Length: 128
Figure 1 (tube, rainbow, N blue to C red):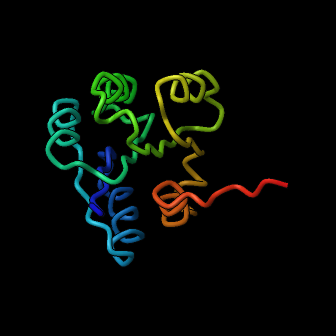
Figure 2 (figure 1 turned 90 degrees about the horizontal axis):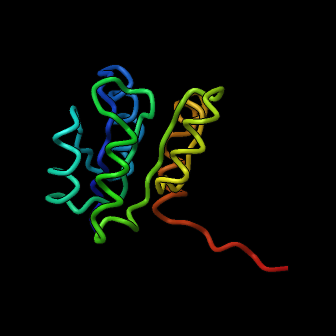
């Protein structure tokens, strides 16, 4: 299985936190720095997942999601997004555009590794 995770986070300090949380788990990170790299890297890398900052100024998250949804091979790509928790419309639109899970920036920061693990290796829900 491919352990490459695309990370659309242009803030270098935040990216470093993500890298430090995931590299020890055996993940390879491929950074997306601008809008053009979204289509280019999702097509060439065949990632295990995508991490998307919904508030990034360099990468338009909604355009990125539309790019991914327009490619049938990528529609099942697990996507973990984070945004400011008060941005209700951003959360709603992200879900409509196929984000698998969206969390607050604080939760993402505190639980990066666990959130990625849950996304890539979902546990079956028990039926009672």
